[in-house]
Length: 216
Length: 216
DNA sequence: TAAGCAATATACTCACGAGTAGATAAAGGC
DNA sequence: GCCTTTATCTACTCGTGAGTATATTGCTTA
Image (cartoon, rainbow over all chains, first blue to last red; front, side):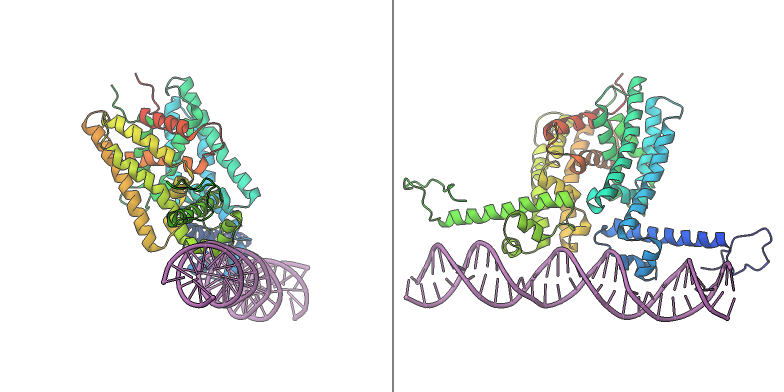
């Protein structure tokens, strides 16, 4: 796709078709990303095993070896997708501890992000990908990353219990419960639906934090 | 497996190796069930697409055509498995409405059963099976069945709101939240773990119903 | 200007797995 | 005592999909 040549300090008036080294590296990155975006959509729609790289390639108007040129093999494609789902979660988890407010407030803010991330393409893929789809080594790394997130979640819950903003409870099960409720949209959420991911995230977090019984 | 011949009114002292028509029908049913049990375990462990019927057959010490003799094809195996997961849920949903107690009490009892069912082999398979794995026609029926359960769940929530035992809230999202939290164990629960499905179910239901903030 | 590399295509190989054909053996009925 | 049905096997077919070998074109660099 020409026409998006970047501006260089001494760029000529008409955009040059000759790409600099940086432009070419960026071009390559863009193509890689395009492959991943196309792949993750298909994985989410049809499942990883039911999606062939031929299909992914065809949806981009290229041939299969092109995908192999950018990403070594099919598992690599999946790994990059789940990593792109995990990464924002990891960042949110890292940031959550250092924010102001009570434990409950920090937890709530984190949960809203957690839910939102789980509704975007890469997040959905991450949630829906089970260890079965990965090689043993990759599965180990994947589980470890998810465990980090879980640990951060537990830390926030503990902090809330410690400062009294959260009722004492089994931390592990509480974390599982929250994770389950906020992962579930990865299965049913339709991005084209009437409610935005943000609205849904806010609603779900309200429900899980306030419980069912009326406050007396 | 001889030796489990049933008692007939005029049964001879030594169990007869000659099976009656009923016994043979039951034998056949037993074998069908054995195939399904073996299959569902493998589906849960490795995923549907990653499980071959050759593997399932081998785990039972028989050959693949034997499976085809009892169940027409691979999709049929999956359909029977998810049906066996759905059926107890449907029964629980049907029973829940007519029980005594407040809306919240009835809902809680239903949720405990819901969670427990989702942790057994067929329940896990049901939760984890996505529409992608099924033919369009089967997927329609599957979705409809799950929708029935969801509707029953919503009905219980509405009843609780109506009688004041549940705080007013968005019924649809509340149902999604509860379902998500209680479906999640289908992914992580290890039947060999220290806690029984019953204990886990009770804990999760306590957490979702009471929320996080301390009751004042 | 030749060599090398990047990007892409066509046209394969190869394994695996769903499903089938056909044989066989036992049991049951007529 | 034959014929049919049930249960099971071995040994296939056939499609699909991951991954590769190799050719081509064009840019970059010595």
